[in-house]
Amino acid sequence: MAGLTTPCGGAPQPLWLANLSEGIDAWTAAALGALQGLTEFLPVSSSGHVAIGAQFFDIRESSLALVILLHLGTLLATVILLRRDIGALAIEGITALRDPSRFRTTPEGRTLVGIAIVTFITAVIGLLLRPAAEAFAQDLRLVGYGFLVSAAFLVVSTVARATNGEVSWRQAAGIGIAQGVAVLPGISRSGVTIVVAMLLGVQGSAAFRFSFLVSLPAIVGAALLEASGAEGLGSLGPQAWIGGLTALVTGYVALVILRQIILVGRMWTFAIYLVPLGLFLVTR
Image (cartoon, rainbow, N blue to C red):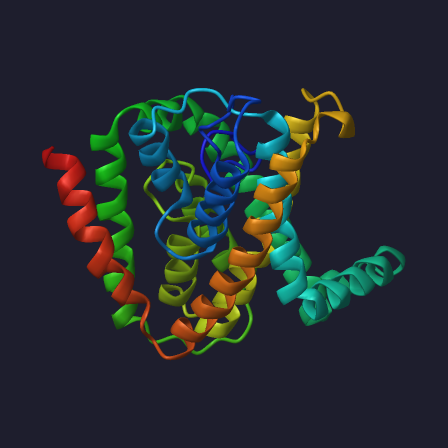
């Protein structure tokens, strides 16, 4: 999403509607939830689309509670879809605390280390790029360039010949760099991380799984960062819950769609949408 910069830098995108007004109506909250849910997971950049929406509707201020629940809605969508993977990783993490060698010798243990590597790298890069991300959000031409970069990655995915069903630690470092750069609005976190993973030799299904597993720490971190400035559950009005629920439903649908598109090798089709949109913003 856009405007709230996550501790992990890029993923999922920060929400530039960081100060939405408390008087927001239910329909607008639902629309923002749908925008968050769909663009957070499809490789089209949620941050870029929210930046466009903020300027188009002249939205300058937003409810902190709504921001938090939009993030938590997409978090829950990811957890529901990947619940078996998350459960296996949680069990392995507990077991590996008693036997640290499992972080090297089991697939789940190595995945946990990979997630930690990505989270650390993207946190560093994301913090360094935070000023640039704020500048992008205010200039739709820069957002347009971000869309074109995302489109280029999606087109390049057609040449990937991936064979590995597991992400190595070295590959995780490359994915972490990609995810960190994706803090810039217009650059799709899901798009660049999945494509970079595939170019580094990871199979599409494994790249999809790993991309969204590494998004979880960032979503949690983003929600906690914003929650630290909120007034607690008392600030969560009905509009915020509507937005969060809509983000959950649309996010889950977007995840299912994206997984199928990756399996059939059609990620490039999103470039058909991103290229004209990016060119329009760059030349307007």
